[in-house]
Length: 189
Image (cartoon, rainbow, N blue to C red):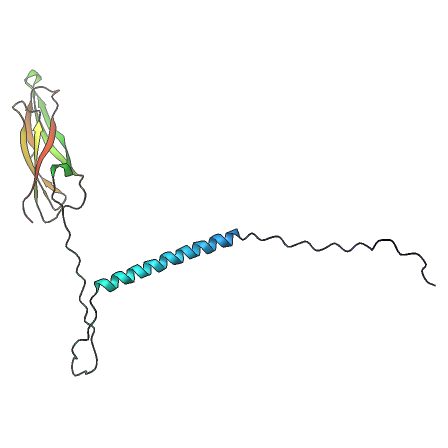
C-alpha cells in the first residue's frame, strides 16, 4: 500500500544553519604592524647615520709594509681617535652664589658684636670648571662698622674651597650682614 496523503504545500523546514564565525577585529594587527614599521624605520635611520659618521671620521686603511719577509700580506694601520680637548668657559661672578655662615658671635650690649663668618659658595654656571686652574674669588662683606670688608677664597680641583674666616664688628646685634662676589680670576692652568 502506498501512502495517499497529499504532500504539504510548503517544503519542510531546513535544519538551523551553523552560527557564523565571529567577525575578527583587525585594529590590533594594524596598530602592531604600524608600530613595527616605525621601529624598523628608526633603527634603519640610526644605522645609516652611524655608518655615515664613522666613514667620515676614520682614515682609510692602507696596506703597511711587509713584516718579517711576509710578502703579499698587508697590515691595516689604524690611528687611535683622539678625544677633543675639553673647553672651559671663563668664569664670572654671575657663575656663583655666595652666602655667609656665622661660626662665632660675641656681643657686648650696646657696644655691638664681633662676628666670625665663612663663605658658602655654590657654582650655578653652565658647563664644567677647569680642574687644573685655581680661581681666586674675591667677595665683599657689608655690615662691618668700619665699612665693607674685602676677602678672597681660592677654588681648586673644581670643588675645594680654601679661605680664611672673616672677623667683622657690627654696630649692634641686629645689624644685617651681607656678601657679594666682586671678581673671579684664574691663577694658572
